[in-house]
Structures are given as structure tokens and as C-alpha cells.
Length: 172
Ligand SMILES: [Zn+2]
Image (cartoon, rainbow, N blue to C red; front, top):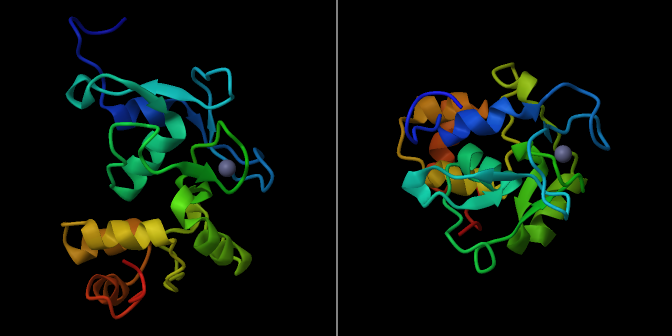
């Protein structure tokens, strides 16, 4: 127990503190494995901050929300389902996660060979190889384009054209 009273470190910090990002985990060796508490079904579980109701939620859902800057809603059952590309339940690598209602589209993306590791961010890789949740998150992101571009390792012009719907116009 650290600190006094009920001050928790931020959710994001508690999440990543227990995620093992060393290579070699999962089917492609790039899974980020949750090392904290897992429920019986194999999914990791984390407690949200009091500001978020202090409820427990699946680690991969929380990782998805934090990474893509989205709020999947309170009710786990009625909210969108977050699924794993890697079929590795304790995995919290946001790039392995996708929303259930996008299954078909995401499978399509995956089959086209999108594979960008976090380590490659900021490299010359300016080709936008984004997932649909990322595109949605970029559109919903209120930060400056430069910041968003840095976050997703894309060009500012790409971030701009996503926001103005020149790119991915078909996406809601
Ligand atoms: Zn994974």
C-alpha cells in the first residue's frame, strides 16, 4: 500500500506497469502480456479509478480505450466488444485489438499485412497503415494535428486528410 487514503496512480500508469512488452510473446512474438490479475476466462482484469466508477474491467478493453482515446461505455455487455487479432487473451497490445463490430473490415486489414510495431513509430514509415478504430480515434481527437501525427507515426498531412475525410471517407 502506498500513499494514504484512496489515491491511486492513474489508470494508464497502473495498466502499463503490469504489461510485459518484451518480444517473444504470442503467435507473432509481439504480444504485450498482462502480468497482473486474470479472471478465470484468461482475460486480465483491472480496477478503474474512482472517477470512472471504480469498477473492474478487462485489461484489453482499458488498453484499447487508452490507446485509441475512446470511451467504450460503461456496460461491458452492451458496449462494443474488444477482440484480439492474436487470440492471446492476456495480450494488451492495442495493435492486436479491434472492435467486434468491425470484424470483417479488420480481418481484411490484417490480411493486407498491416504490421507496425510500436518501436517503428516515428521512423520513415509515414504510410498510413491505420486501423479503423485508429481512424475514428483520430477524427475524435481534439488535439493539434502535429500531436496526433506524432502519436500515430503518420504525417501531419495524413492526419489532416483523415480528419477532413479525404481519406477513409467510407468510415463513419
Ligand atoms: Zn497480442
